[in-house]
Length: 356
Image (cartoon, rainbow, N blue to C red; front, side):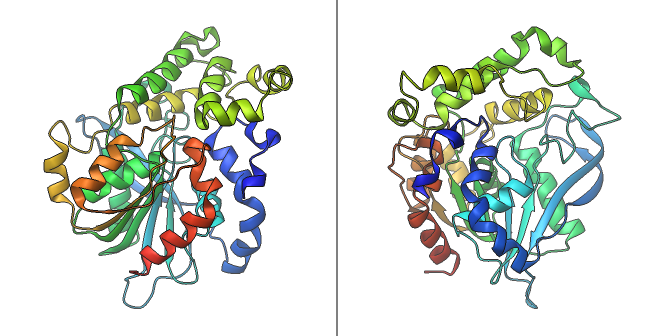
């Protein structure tokens, strides 16, 4: 797995793009064997948001893999990371061999704003920047409606997510404490630190400052090279980045990638998901101590010690409040350390899901 983190792979901007490349070779035969489900949509009608606003014609994209057992006790819900889709998530989770579709019924959910589920880029009734602002709490509420109203599940064996998916996992365990047995947030957070806010706000400001953004009324998503470089340099660590992109290699990398920019994900969708992370706080304005008291699930927290994209501190502090198990990643791969350390993460998660 480590050998895949080379120059060509890291020259992609997106976390989703990186994970797709990291896992494609591993997962393709496995998905075919398990019968990968097509993209599906849950039509939720009107979704009332935390702000009091509503999403009209609200729909949630999802895919499933594996089968629900007769007792209905083996379902695992997996929400997407920032800018990710259910298709990419399916490869990312299975690529580190963290959840076996031969044992579990896996539900991969497209979070609000990912361009598949209701988003500024695809809404006809509330297009572009007229789309109502949503939070990670709103993401979880729509996912709960998917599981209960569409899939008719009464309980989940686990909720598990990476990055923004980890943030949603923390939100799930606080908002619906009786609805799951286990929770596995991976490189996620309970709320943003000042460093996180600096990064995410800088990315949003860079989008808004780009003349091609045109207040969100562009014909095609702008290149946004500053956004691309901000994201790229924080995905791993300074040591890892300097090792991969030496002084000699950097000009070619910048020409081939930095100037092309962040065009793989709609700019307005990016702003809305950024805003959701910026305002993410599972205490909902209260204390994390009180939020921790609500949690009933058994929890395995997987933070990355050298994460420059999502600071590991809040997740580690919450794990202590819960008395939860913790699998600390230490490589200089930073935010994507779970891919570099897949030989630890996969077996660790698999054992936890089995109750070991």
